[in-house]
Length: 164
Image 1: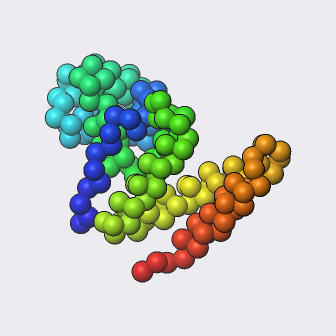
Image 2: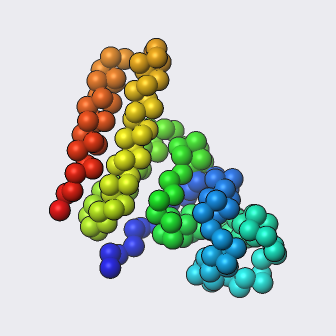
Image 3: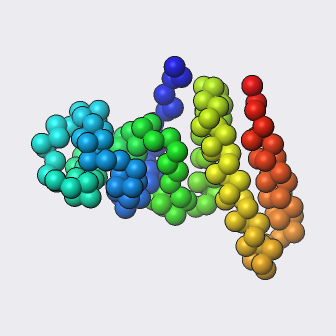
């Protein structure tokens, strides 16, 4: 089994809304209880008899204890397919977000998490494709940046080929 990825820093912690939305969309109520237990929280310490209420209260509980980064890490560990959008990451520019994503790719590659690595690459490919489309529609970006993104998009397409 691969070692866990390092915990996210506070600067890359998604917003409370993004965390709550991820919990509601990707976890059942029973799985939320398990997640709380894994974070050393007694399920009865948090009010809520519906998934939405329990998710909201779990986020509030962790926020009040300055532990949102650990909750975000637990979500990413339990559901690696969840990728928080740049706008969901508090106070981060898109450039900082993408730099952090590249760091995450490197960690995934180094710990031989091939599926996670390819998933991240494909997600980035979608982001790059969106940027290319916006630029082609007159987004006001430089030709050099357009060419760089197009080259990156082609490179990422290669990643869908089995690496090992």
